[in-house]
Image (tube, rainbow, N blue to C red; front, side, top):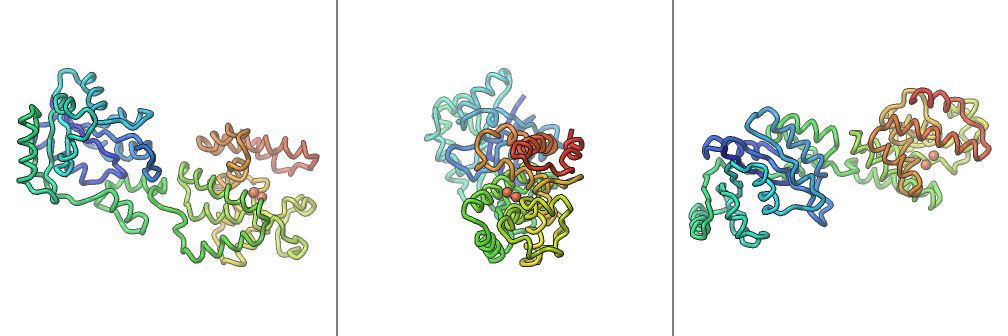
Amino acid sequence: MNIAILGGTFDPIHTGHLAIAQEVIDKMNIDKVLFIPSGNPPHKNDVTSKEDRFNMTKIAIMDNPKFEISDIEVNKQNFSYTIDTIKDLRCKYIDDNIFFIIGADNLKFISSWKDSKNLLKKCSFIVLSRPDVSEENTRKYIRDFKKHGADMKYLKSILLEISSSDIRARVVMGQSIKYIVPENVINYINQYNLYKQYPVLDKDLINSMYYFVKSKIPKKRFIHTQGVVQMAIELAKIHGEDLDKVYIAALFHDVAKKMHFDEYKGKIDWDSFEMDQDHLKHGKLGAYILQKHFCISNEDILNSIRFHTVGRSNMSKLEKIIYLADMVEYGRGDDIEQLREFCRKDLDKAMYIALIISKEYVIGKGQKIHPIVDKLIAEYR
Ligand SMILES: [Fe+2]
Ligand SMILES: [Fe+2]
């Protein structure tokens, strides 16, 4: 069998990759294209997680029986070199011919790759034409490599000038990527908020919200608030929640912590329990402040601020994220790392554990427990 390897970061995979893979099958007598998403390159924090890149590639190719995906590189702890991947594949595909697909623009770098002489012996190469490299130059390179025993074939490819970086930029700017990226990959990008930097909201609005909150609470409380924002964003990305909503809710959750509650009597719908527990009043007052000063009327945002103190029945995903992020932000220390891990894996399970911990905490402090807490523990059990 002839197997062609198409490696890359696939951040994200796009129709250009897919069209090239199909073209290799049609024109180069290839039976199967193996897509190999790379592991995360060292010292680069701006690359999407390897899990997300792998998942997007997997769903992009799933309707083509001649396309396959390999986790050989994403499963490695360290970034892997081409020669190591080819060696591993050689062990797996003993009787098959392996072709490595490479763009003409990369030919000149091969000599600098790790163990390149060995690499040129271990597999064949399919060189794809590139609009920015002349055919004459490419053919000259190929002749030179062949002189040294390499097996290289040239493929004048259809010219699809799509780049992953352009796609990422389009997502950031809110432009469409329809027809450039497969539909199911677009859905994945939207669901997990990939490439969307936060805050996407108007910069002036974000600035005024930020300084407003900063001016209302003591420095230590503001550091905690920043921790909650960071944690809530982390959880939102994992569980697929809107980053703008999460940002605002987390930023404002404790905004009313030091306000004079008496001034707001009659305006806020505190329940009888909250009425005599001052430390619980800042939830509903915080939501009121956000609504009043910034005209935010999104009920999900407001509820997640209102109920971050004790929770309530049937909490939305956003409400759970804010409740939990408040409890497990990194400033709370390492003792709760286990709960933090539950938050990443399963919000409901994390809610159950968080409620039990906070019940014990309240008892330990000699405070009264809000009647909803036991009800919620039963709900999440
Ligand atoms: Fe709070
Ligand atoms: Fe808080």
